[in-house]
Image (cartoon, rainbow, N blue to C red; front, side, top):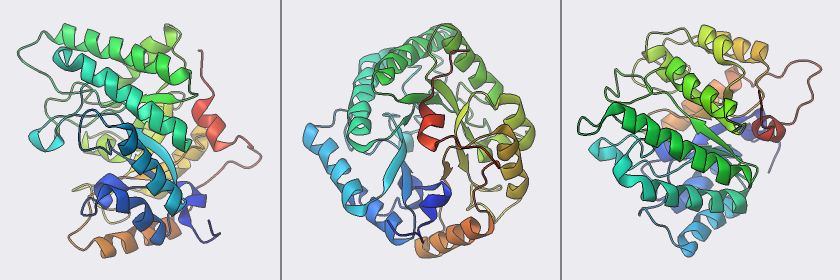
Length: 299
């Protein structure tokens, strides 16, 4: 990996969204060619139950491209049909558990230390209390299995303007679940904070970062309006980076944005953003990024 790679500045390209037009196996190499040494991805398999060969194919694609996978989602269902996760679905609990185990095999093979657990939508056919209880039990299952691999599991709030039925519509609702799991002893549970979703929900990303700094284990950037490339819209990312610096955050930052039809132009915009907003580290702080993500907080 050359010194010119933007990955050394802790930015990770979300290849599932930004490079959605490419086959999964080609996305790591395309990210590397664009100058990114770190990537993140959604569920990378075409079926709910990937084979060992399919898991190995993703691992090998990462290895050939010499990029580091920093965060990966478990199976979130059919996104195109409106699904936003399986965690809170009592009818797909076994599928959720199988996807946790599959992703942990990929994490073990690649050194990935963050696994995101999409929470899911409100199902009017099911009591909401049962959905939240199912989600919590699935979260505890995932946390226990992940702890054995040194992996942190994440919950991500999604704004209700874009995702009107999602059961964790803001950072406060996600924080309550994370805190509950931690108090029960699951110290490897954290929050994935997407600055776009915070802003789209009408909240101040800077205040949200300050409020939940102790829980945040991964951060993503996109701009408003439209989930565009950061730096092309309304969010003041210099101010956001200062808030992350003040909070002591030293993990990766995912660039999870919707590309324009010209993907090459979107990648150029991402490179310009990275060049204008280098990742910041507090002076005198020597924590290693991987330790930040796996140092299980037992508070």
